[in-house]
Image (cartoon, rainbow, N blue to C red; front, side, top):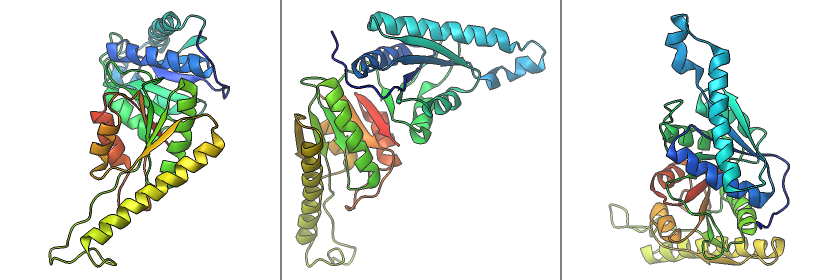
Length: 298
């Protein structure tokens, strides 16, 4: 039996278009909802604008399209209940675009889950575009699930990237809750980049040598990690936390850190105390490159 944590009362929403990618997202979301003790809403978006030409031709039938969309959503809900018997999974349809429908749903959701891409049998939607759009605009955490993504758990930790920014702090708080929910360890990563001499052979401003600047960058990353780990130890008793301050590009550090992991959590933007970024650019790169689910925290 799945051990549940305290629910927020809000549902988890998963986008579904009938594609294999969307089915995997539904199965991942069903396991997450069961763990969290949350209901699951399976949302299909028919996207009225796609049928605008038919509407002009006089054959647009909103009621019929809503019915077709709801049937597609119900198919997704059946998959969720098959994955997690006993889970409350309901179907919901919309005539908005997938991005608009999920954005709207995010206002009342505990979280949103989408696949990386897909071409559904009912509505040919590029879910990849939807995933990136929703991740940047959602009012709740969005989890993007790639092909064959595992779920977190013992031996499959939750990894979170932080940089000392407010966005990173929010991601850290969410990652701690996710790790507790899944019964997983939490690995915190704060990368730093080694500075270089300027074109005139001078070290970075404020430092006597490049090595001095590098030492300061490393110490800054380690201090951010110490503060984060100490806070989590106070707030999340029993949570196993480890930290790492690798040198190098943020994306490369995160890819290495997520080998064997079950979930990567990132803020959707941020400039920290270090000269590194966990911005939309880094998050976007990880959505493209990651082989595990990536959760983007607004």
